Picture 1 (cartoon, rainbow over the protein chains, first blue to last red):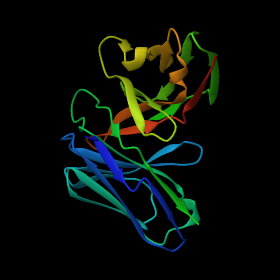
Picture 2 (picture 1 turned 90 degrees about the vertical axis):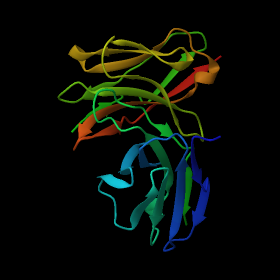
Picture 3 (picture 1 turned 90 degrees about the horizontal axis):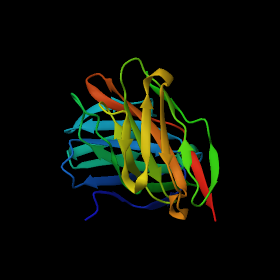
Picture 4 (picture 1 turned 30 degrees about the vertical axis):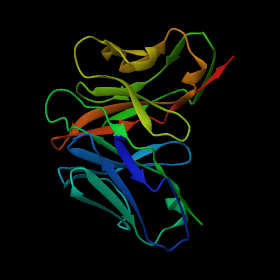
Length: 116
Length: 115
């Protein structure tokens, strides 16, 4: 069973379209994340949810809207896609470090979004 | 805010040689530190982490890393590299932000292994 699964793996779409990426984790983690990896491999946090509550919301265009229906799912909807949105989007999950140990992340295999 | 610097963008080593990947962090308190590996077309996989205790931590695939507070470093090492270790390696620092952990990744070091 895949621990963190994202769909679709590849997404090619035209500018101006709206698309969604889905993410599910079966690890029982309470926190999920969306990261964007650009062509230079730089990873930037976009959003994080803890038990369906938004806890991290970085400077991201409001065309990007995350939704977490339950703690095992975190989806990303993107409106009016632009060329600059082309990247690999990674979903990840972890337990949340409220005290003590920092927990590592488990990553999905990524969604490569290409906007043409 | 925390930050991570990986000074080496690209490193080439011979198979069987030792490896050290450098990582420097910036954070006011004791950070959580991580190393991840990303193979082509894959997501990131956690190699090891440090949050307290012994400053030399062992990870998977024969990797280890040493936390040096005085140098703000967390370098990754492996005594003998295998061809399958060729990948992108990311150092990351976690810190508390508003009661939650927030992890910031370095820009990565691409490891090439030559026969």
